[in-house]
Length: 180
Image (cartoon, rainbow, N blue to C red; front, side, top):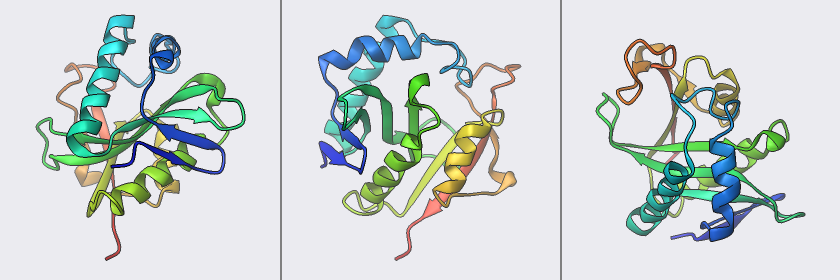
């Protein structure tokens, strides 16, 4: 298991108590959460960190807290998450990210996602990694394409955890298969 990894500009590490308040602020930001059904309360945000940490213990990977190496600032998360909701492609391991607004546009998501994918195909021994987002989230789709992921529109799906009738329900699915 990798508790921490470093990239040129980032430290990807397990979560700390000091991450909880900035993470909650990020999850309460309507712009950050634009492509999710709702913002999160502090309790919901803290519970998410608890679930993330349990995932590390259970699977040996997870959604690493992101810290900018030069400043020590917490900026969000990037990593791997096991998805088990009912869909044609699950269970599957997803690479995902969520960054605070000031961290947008600096290439942090792609930098950290590349490290997470490397861990997934390396130490975690995965054969495939997926990524998904609401059809409206073109910024995350651009990160997926830069990762080398591909999309087959036939794989697009209605996310069962998004309410029916929501414009966010329809999701795109991108895939990346290891070269073995």
